[in-house]
Image 1 (tube, rainbow, N blue to C red):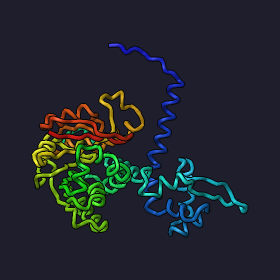
Image 2: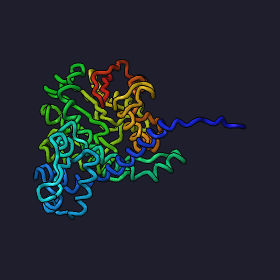
Image 3: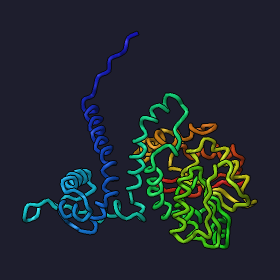
Image 4: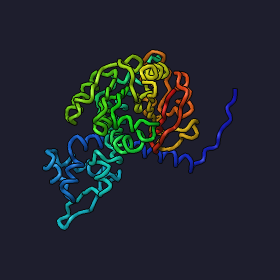
Length: 361
């Protein structure tokens, strides 16, 4: 058997190597961003304004030499602004208004720290994921390090805060009015409870039940509800998506979690059995088209990468192991919903990062 020799286009090869070089910096940068957040370096820069490494290190209780190197790396990434030397020749650094928004304002939809925490935590599991490729038994969400859980909440919460109450819930048929007057809601796969708490704060007449199979996340959610002052209207409980308790829910929510489940059809079938006669399911999933070609862009790259390291192995670690993946797209999600018995499926809303479906019937 002979192999036809291919001619290498040196320009194409150079561009490919250049992209890889960028990825080297980005991969290292994820750890540097998380370190900067944990040490308060971004917040320190925001507080101090233009400053030098020595002043920032004193402000944050860190070592000047390490901080100076970190600042240089961050400036090379465009995450910190290098202002040049002052009159005494000392390098000065600052955050622009946009850099402050992205790296210090946790309520902003542009806040990116949580995403870096997710990326770093997922990368730390690469040895286990390598083996999961070989044996096919998957690697569960609960087996990752805790930075994944914290980062997921910090990454998704600002987007939920920006859109959930003002856009997604009003897009559902009759749901907003029910929530205002008093509804019963289940938030399945609630994690640290960010989505549950946001709804409870907006609709004090309603009651909210958050369920997740991960005990440590439920503990965090219960503490967050106490801190937010909504414990009277919110109950968090350890339970799986295909067997959580209760009935007559006016709304059952799945926020960015159905594709992670081993048996998404079983989860939706159970959700349908727990709905009130006029109840609906709110299904929020990562934005995606129905074909691979539609998703070959920066957002798709992120979601495919996360799906390979987190979502698909998690599904494979559970019974059925459907492994929808984080880029399932509206058609496959609709097929799963109809397989579960729903007769009415529609795209109710969308954002650049989210696909929002309403399931009923």
